[in-house]
Image (cartoon, rainbow, N blue to C red; front, side, top):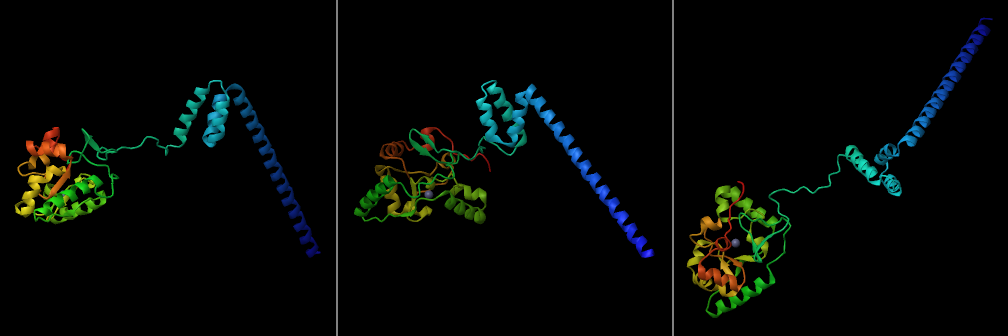
Length: 280
Ligand SMILES: [Zn+2]
């Protein structure tokens, strides 16, 4: 009897659980139906009263479809697009269309009267990279080298083209060794070196003593005939921004080179420009 009673009790409990479950399911169903009805009601109300409000809200979720739909609707087209834009900018603040420009990173090199200018005031873009010395420059050098050879002199290019990265490495090596202040007097910061132009090179021994060699004297007297100038002459340190470098030649063409040679002017004086770093 006891056993039978306990089985009966268990059955009753099971039935109770079943009834509760059915009620719960029914309640969930009813509630979802109510929610769906409310939603449907809301949507139709909105779309009836104002198209503009509904469209941009969808636009945030799906760009392409709303763009199409707003275009197809000729009515108040501009208003729709403006609202659309505002919503995009609000929901997706990550998108930044304008290109950020940093003051010291020029996009283009500077030319004055067709002459490429690079000094402490005029920087080259980081990606300005001709890859080697300019062909005209190389040919002019060969001519000069040949004529020097005819006089028993031996000149060669010790350092030609240097990329931004090359200069970065070299400059920082000097800074580590001698400190920035000293390094700035003879080594250009990356982006500020004429070697990056492919129009300049260093001859023979990169040392002050080059000026007193027979080659050094001959180059100083004749380089302009081939289109080259001694870019950083003696006594013009405060104008060019660099100490005297008898070995550093810059190609500017024979006309300008001869004019500069005869007048004794530096490129800075000739074009009335400065050569000063903006910052330390
Ligand atoms: Zn040089």
